[in-house]
Amino acid sequence: MKTFFIYVVDDEKTAREGIALALKKTYRVDAFGSAESTVGAIEKEPPDLILLDVGLPGMSGIDALEVIKETHPDIVVIMITAYEDVQTVVAAMKLGAYDYVVKPVQMGALKVTLRNALETVSMRKEIRDLHEKHLKENMPCFIGESNAIQDVMDVVKRVARSADTSILIEGQTGTGKELIARAIHYRSPNCKQPMVEVNCAAIPKDLIESELFGYERGAFSGAAKTGKEGLVEKAANGTLFLDEVGDLNMDAQAKLLRFLEDGEYYRVGGTNKRSVQTRIVSATNKDLPGMVLEGHFRQDLYYRLAVVKIEVPSLNQRRDDIIPIAKHFLVEFNQKFDKHFTGISADTETALKQFNWTGNVRELKNFIEKGVLLSDGTELTLHDLGLEGAHKGVASENREYNFELPSISPSGIDFPAILKSLEISYFKEALQLAGGNESKAAELLNLSRDKFRYRRNKIEK
Image (cartoon, rainbow, N blue to C red; front, side, top):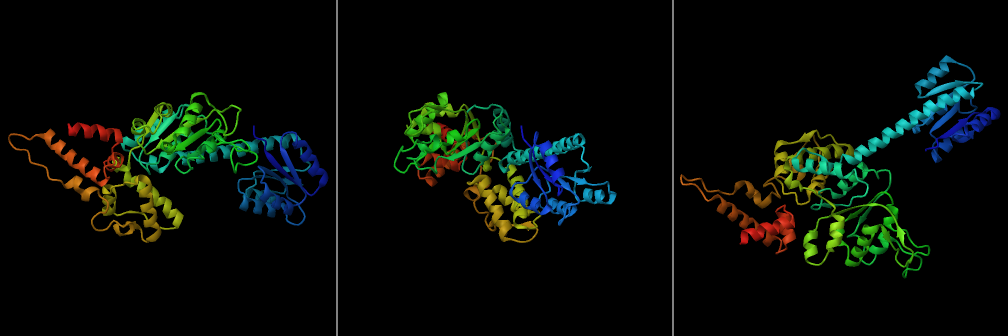
């Protein structure tokens, strides 16, 4: 339970010490004899509430109240006055005082006033925490009404109810996998515990084990003398997010598997078995089943990580959401750069919806940020975003909308053959552009590698 912190400010030593002594049984208390010393102390450690005498020497209580409310408006202030001077009380209330008490202070009445005031403090903090949580959950990747993203949101809400189920998030670069991991954490029973994020691709392969599980003193050359706590320990009772999990080497995979099986591990160089509870959420833009077949990823680890799989759609798969997301970023960067854009021109909206977003939401964000920062006016244009002329980046010069299809003759057409021919053409071109790399070709076609292989094998038969 939180212990509230209270300042008692009164130039009369007997009154100040008496009130402080009575309150210390329930609260943390500091006492001050002047407004000047109080204002200085607030900058070092602000309290939840201040009992502030009106008639202080030097800076008066009313003047101090004005300063406090200007710099720390959330601090609750209760005034102490020697007599009920209506004019003084009204002035204090106008400046933001919560209430007032009259000397000699009756402790019973004061405690009731304090309890009521601190309930307000608790409510404000709860509302602030909920607001922050709301902001964390309402992230750009979740904006939109397309079925694709609504399905993801529904899965997130369901899986978040569990405190320990392992989740694998799959999707292209820039789709917001890390934001979805945070949304799961902040909706889960673990939300008050830490979420530790690990970029497996950014940590050198020979250090990944010591980063995850920590090490003991003298475990290797250059090790800290006191040893080091691993990221698994830091995520105790919370969430450990392994981004780019496909980049883990085989040794690290084996140790992660052991930890997932029983929650136990050894620090590097250690002989004492340790245990910790944490939920593992991992993410990748790689084809883990393909890596399993090729011997680059452990099959048993894959099944442990992917108890629940969430496949994040690319931005090209949810084109109806592009403009709502773009407008969200427009508002964000208007505020950041003090600009006054009110919308996006109609031809620019069309271009944005047709653009081939290989970088997904992250790429769209960068486009809008650059446009808002470098341009002026009230409406974002094609020129502002560098999309003037032949809508740059539209897949295959917008061929997906302009290819010629045979007309239906009186005798009909061979529709399956036409579809197969079209599919063969795109698959062939994608493989050429990707230099024969199936994963890259699948990404160009906005398909998972498994779906790409299945459909390729089907059309080549």
